[in-house]
Amino acid sequence: MHSYYSHGKLLLTAEYAVLKGAKGLAIPCERGQILDVKPQPSDYLSWKSFDVNRALWFSATFLLPFFSIVECSEVSIAEKLGAILKAAKKQNEKFLTQGAVVETHLEFDRNWGLGSSSTLISNIALWAGVNPYKLLEQSFGGSGYDLACAQLETPLLYTRKGVQPLVESVTFDPPFKKDLFFVHLNKKQNSLEAINALNWDTIDQKLISEINYITEKIVKCTDHSVFNTLLSDHEKIIGALLQQTPVQELLFPDYMGGIKSLGAWGGDFILASGNQKTPNYFLEKGFTTVIPYSEMIFGS
Image (tube, rainbow, N blue to C red; front, top):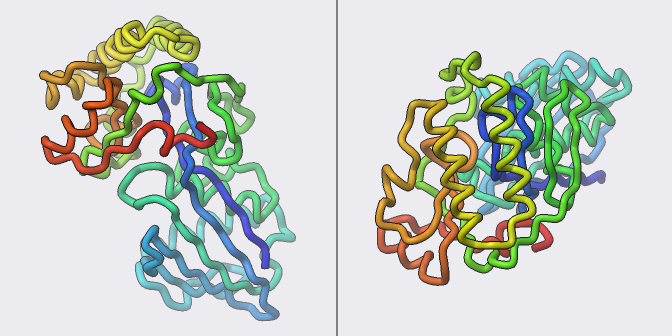
């Protein structure tokens, strides 16, 4: 039996702009995904995926070496998985030369947007011994910051540079972290749809420089009120880019602290910077998933 593990991720700054080379502050999560492989002397690859509640949510059997689908619970997912495995084998011909029984186990809710896809890509890359960024390009696409989070155990600054990105470990340990919370908006946001809807020509060097400046300030910030102002400034820049109203102004105008969208706007998690009354504020508004910073972020 071989076992592989990758952390989930959160991008605190530079959403959207990170795809054009802006510097993003990303943080690996406490929860991730496990991939267990048991080699078998056969021509079949048996795959089972389990959710956070240990319930089977996807299964498939492939015939090697061409990853032909023998049976599956959902064709579109099986086709995508087969394409990823083929891409991994193209990078490493010695990968999957015999059959195997594979199980994946998620440690977070699939609807949370913490990286069910990126942790899968990372684990398959570890298993196959291939470049995860190249594997990402050949499958889901994206900036790749989530792959950096998958295998790093510290906060990081991420700059996209093809299949060899610039990844810099940083110390991000704000003294007010007990007053930071991650709140799920009760909606799963499709990152690919959000990416495809954006006019990328509007992300110019001026915008990238502004985002980089805020990112660097946030990393070093020790003043809570300044931190909230930086969150607001970032939201205004991305809001203007997307021609959308920032989430605090849209949904939580009476909130006493700072709020920032994380990842694709309109769903998944937001960062709420406030005080110890913050959880009750969101619970009273019907947002029941409120996770303290220390419980979400790895090693905090």
